[in-house]
Length: 208
Image (cartoon, rainbow, N blue to C red):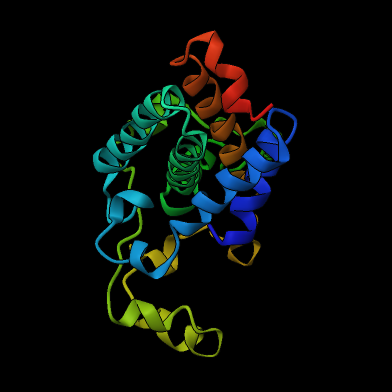
């Protein structure tokens, strides 16, 4: 997703749970995943190129860093790790076809309200047709230039990131479902992370 929407998802999910400083630190680490150095050779940051196993492992790798960081009184490192893992978790819905697969069941009938999106339906998480967008460099890079996008898209395969992504509302109405699913997933990641921590570290992680 674009930076604006990662930040909105974090705010919707966590602003009542965290201090403003904690949320700012988590947000900064989250959006840094989209820096240039995170765009090349790091499919696991974004669930790109069908790197599902690698991305799930990356989420857990970062989660495993949180408790040791808090125990060492390095709360900034803990927040940074959580920011990185939430970025990856949120990108699952924007960079894969999970939302499209989930919506197929409503073909011919009214789509459910956006808040009812099922963000962790096992039958779709394990669907044999689950895919994420492939990055066809260097041509893919030109699709990020608004003036060139309409000329580049026809040249890219339909399984490319340029065609598949739900990174912003410009990609159509399914973006709202991806956004809502990412909010739910971020809340899940928060609860799952807290479950790995002893109660005495909760207040520190909350930044309060």
